[in-house]
Amino acid sequence: MSAVFNFQSLLTVILLLICTCAYIQSLTPSVLDRNKTGLLGIFWKCARIGERKGLYVEVCCIVMVFSILFI
Image (cartoon, rainbow, N blue to C red; front, side, top):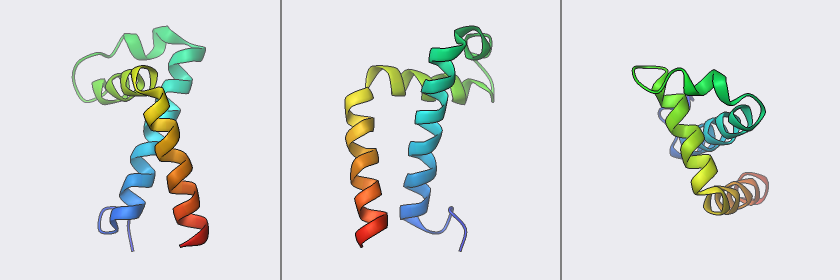
């Protein structure tokens, strides 16, 4: 089953995308800052979410790990 049809997998993919974009933004800020609009602007927005809501994203990642491992 693909991630589009499985809600838990979709949430996992979104969390991983947010975490990855925030990590890339912290290493090389110029890569994502160039593309603030358009289709590639999604990655810039995910990086902003990861930076500004870092605590909530971290808690969601921990909950998702326990959900995947134990449920």
